[in-house]
Image: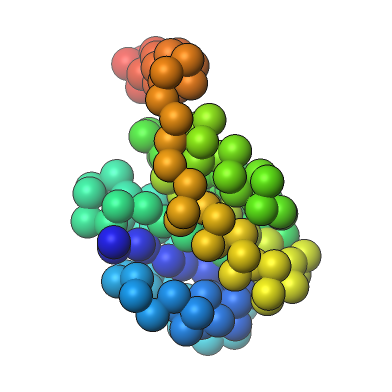
Length: 148
């Protein structure tokens, strides 16, 4: 599985911890690569573009709280980014919402919990069925604004 991963300066350490914890994943690290202050939209946008283009199957986006990364990623058509702070949220984001970008807040999660959230997200399939109908409605809303 190929996963795009990116962060701002606040998420660099957690990004590296995740990459180390999941050695079987082929990560495309889109930056940033140090803790010098930077703007999260630049790097989260790269994650979203990797997923949209199909270069990566899924994405992981990290900033300080996850809020800015979540807002940014969800501006991109076709991205279903889910800010998850526990394993239940990660499971439901996949099972019911077919999230394709996991968003984490480096300053609000411990490293061990973040790893468990990632593992849950990776292991959980999309259920489809009635949930697909709902996602189709979300896509229709997105498409209606893109046409303007």
